[in-house]
Length: 158
Image (cartoon, rainbow, N blue to C red; front, side):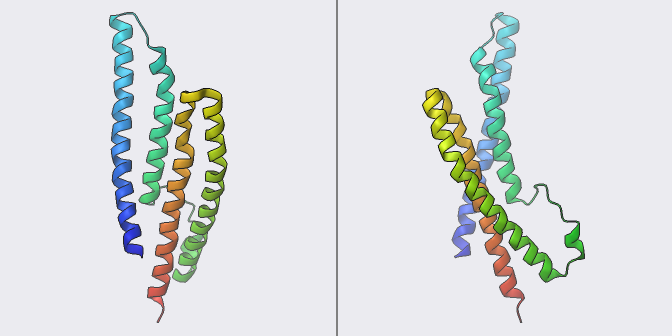
């Protein structure tokens, strides 16, 4: 069962890497076009200026999901150093379970938020879909971590 979940995780990672490179390239392109048009043609695109923060937000959230994949997110593990190996595994499993719950609640809350944004702003509200997507991917990543911690615990039993 864990094998097909790992394949989904690998495919998701490839998509995230592609999105990160694409969004970063788009952001650089938008900024360059705006600078050139402002200095050469004395015209500034307000549309590009307004969309740049949205691209930055998407880029940050895609980067955050990639950091979850590689366990490079901010962690506070000071006390875990003093735990025995079983205690560390148990603490990591419990924190993954807690994070899954938080991500599930935030995904549930983000869906009505996006629908409200679409009702209020029409097509300009669609970029808010990044929130439920991010929390769903984070839920998946914490689920993978939780399942792998259970598998490790089973392998350590005599």
